[in-house]
Length: 483
Image (cartoon, rainbow, N blue to C red; front, side, top):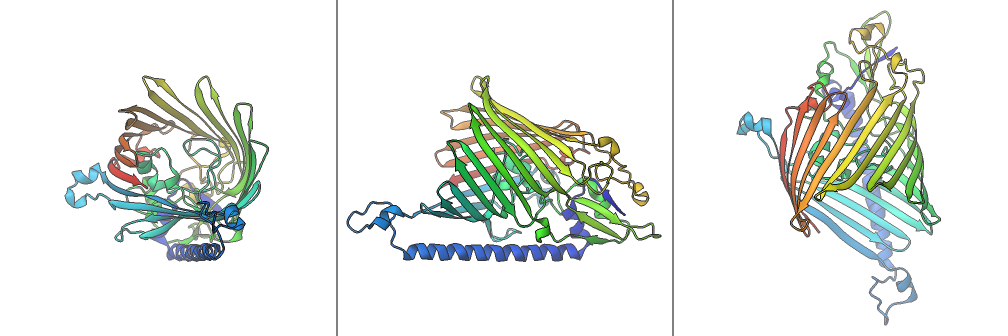
């Protein structure tokens, strides 16, 4: 019998309770390193082979250029950014300077690409200081794309966006997220690609007509959302599980096998003034489920099993300018294996949707608004969220939660001084939890230089998903040079 516990911070729990988890993580890291090394070696071989050919750089050397030179120019580009930033938490300063830290200060990105009319190779690197707890050099994306007329295929580590929502819509299912980075990134950025985790995948697309495209994707193994193991961004509601009263064995699955492979297909087109899309995706829910295994007649759990539920998604999206509003909408049905809603070890099927728009409203003030909601099906079949029910088999992973989970994200901005200076405030409101995060920012941009002063302030119900971070009010100063 398996019984699950709701809203667990899985990585944190495993890191403190089971060496098997560390072994699995080390195995995954070794696999990732091998994949990266092989891919980088492949790109090197391709680059060497291209260098060995007779090619031109697109300068039109009439005297020495051959027909092959003109037909197969190689374009190489290098770009990136250098950033200096300081991130401080207000509560740390109130506890004394010995508790206050300002982060890594320096970060950087370097992006390399080499392209011919038939192929493209991309390597994007993240640079961190040598004293950073993570690697000082990491691969953000690395992939090879080959063109065959209207068809192209790519393979490697990639970040892709499906759907049309501005802020993490229900159809954007390919890349998991680094949960602990979302709000500090959102405070001074409108693009959240930095919190996405690149996945090894194969992606192909075929364009036909003037505006139509069909694409398919295969992801050979699975990675969940990255949840902080310890520290201020860990889930405060799971204190009981991080310090279990009884010793248990944690069973973490090996998600690097083909049993955890995922895939999908997506079609997009333009009909009149409307952009529409439809997609199907089979994968694993990125949030973990936790079950207990019992051996009768012992009433105490023998082990805790970490589960990642498989699901099917069918989704539609739409974008159009309506009444002066740049409107975007998505809708999806997520079908899990719990088709009766009474299996506490599996998340119930759900309907998810998002609706958003942006426009200049008055005096040059821009409003960007988006509502995301998920509606649980078979809600009346849920079990209990009382830990006592673990022994009786009545505990449910979603027990005690509301029928709906609704979030409103709004950003209001105004530009001054020939659009160089921007005042912006973003708000995320958890409607059922009655909690908020408010993120004001002052941003100055001059050509390739960008300076931002921002902050994040959490308030509302301390038991909510946002309100639990009331001790995480932060201020952030950053200066970024893009080249």
